[in-house]
Image (cartoon, rainbow, N blue to C red):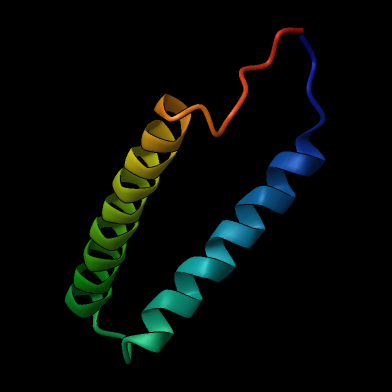
Length: 69
């Protein structure tokens, strides 16, 4: 397979920009940046868990129909 290097470069540029923004938001303190990212990740993981429980509960009650292709 042959992939163009341009989308990879754009993705890399966006990631680098996001990294710079995160560090800047924490006043340039790398430890504070890592701490903030870990906390944000833990929050998002807990949200995913809650949403998975809610969907599973609703699915079990027949509120969602499965896709039958």
